[in-house]
Every structure is written in structure tokens, then in C-alpha cells.
Image 1 (tube, rainbow, N blue to C red):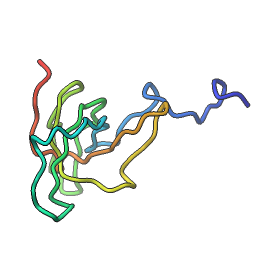
Image 2 (image 1 turned 90 degrees about the vertical axis):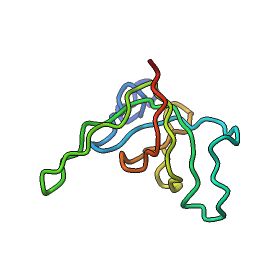
Image 3 (image 1 turned 180 degrees about the vertical axis):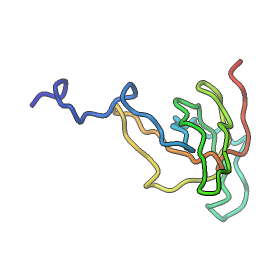
Length: 107
């Protein structure tokens, strides 16, 4: 089966983050937002927002609204290797809304 006819092929056009999550493309660390802590869980990283999932509604009807839009640059807490996905040969991360620490709006 050719790659073009594979119905299970993942591409940016067919991928949608789950409610409460954001698909981001990591940006090169320029040293401006790196936490000096040795605790890897406190490392702040920078990425450009590719896609944003729908708002998340908890079991108690609390709504987590979207903290950013496509094209924004965000600062977020370190995430783990299993939160990454390869799409069209590029590495992306899936970040929960509550991991976003700051937003630089694209507009």
C-alpha cells in the first residue's frame, strides 16, 4: 500500500487535539525563558501553536477555555517524551491547557 493511499496516515490536516489540549511545534531554545532549576519538571519551553482543541468541560461542568490561538507563541512547562507525536516527518508536542504559562499573541 502506498503512503498516499494509506487511510491511517497522520497529517496536520487530519489531526485534531482532544478537548483541553494544544498541538505545538517546539522552537529552538534561545536561553531567554529557560529555568535555571535542575528539576526538569520546572523547565519552561517555547513553541508555536499549530492547532488548539475545543474547551475542556470537567465532570463538574468547570470549563477550561482556550489559552491561545493558532499562530501564537506559548511558554509551557516541560512535558514528557510520550506527549510527542511525529506528523509528516516533523516532531510536535501535545500540551494541556493548564501547562501553558504565557502567550505571545500572533496579532
